[in-house]
Image (cartoon, rainbow, N blue to C red; front, side):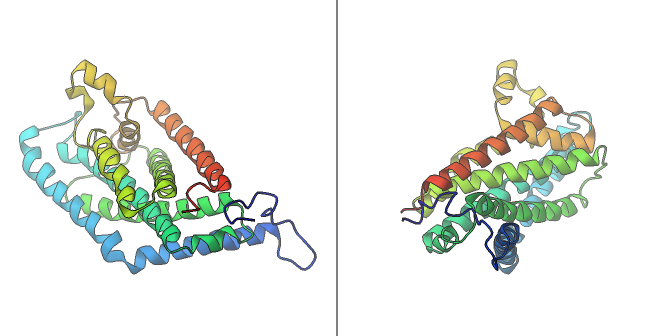
Amino acid sequence: MSIAGTDATDRSGSDTPGAPSTARTRWVGFKTIMVREYDRIIRIWGQTIVPPAVTATLYFVIFGALIGRRIGPMGGVDYMQFIAPGLIMMAVITNSYANVVSSFFGAKFSKHVEEMLVAPLPNWVIVIGYVGGGVVRGLLVGGVVTAISLFFARLAVHHAGIIVAAVLLTAIVFSLGGFLNAMFAKNFEQVNWIPSFVLTPLTYFGGVFFSISLLPPWAQTLSYANPILHMVNAFRFGFLGTSDVNVTLAFALMVAFAAVMFAIAVALMNRGVGMRE
């Protein structure tokens, strides 16, 4: 039997006398992946935490303190207050994605992903483990950027629950995106294609630095097709109480994206896509 061909029956982890319970086995597997991902994030903190912190500081200084003075209020609030939630969310998006795509592709490249595939773990546990690692890095970096933003802007919290829900769902969605990218990537160049040519443009046009009300009608209509616009605005609504999009629709989209992408990731893992290279 090929490693990638291990099916749900073979790896169901059914209990036998004297053997660990299925739930305990899955929990140990999930915890092992999470601990390894967390250790990796902390071990190379100079690559995972410091660069986004420096980048965010530069954004605040250049776009907020210098250019923002000329722009004036945006969306009825000070420009620095307007961009702060967007910069926090941008850090969460890029780092959640980057953590999973680099970690899982590294596991494929070094072949130790095969050890997980032959372990008595269902594929959905493996997916959740890597996604959890991406969420942890996204939240860590997001917390650092939030602390930096407090030196430049006053962040009033209008809806704490919306802030937490938006940042968690966004981190999950882009961690799953990184997982899917890593599954299909055959080399390190392909790992960087989507972040460079898809993720970055969508992020910059996702309302991080401006309100789409400044755009002409046709551009506004086009912008609504950008999922990052909905995520950034839902998060911003939690701080400012204003949004360019329907917040309920934004959360519906995030939940739908997370559910569909998780189902696709698990289905592809069950088929062994990208595991045979």
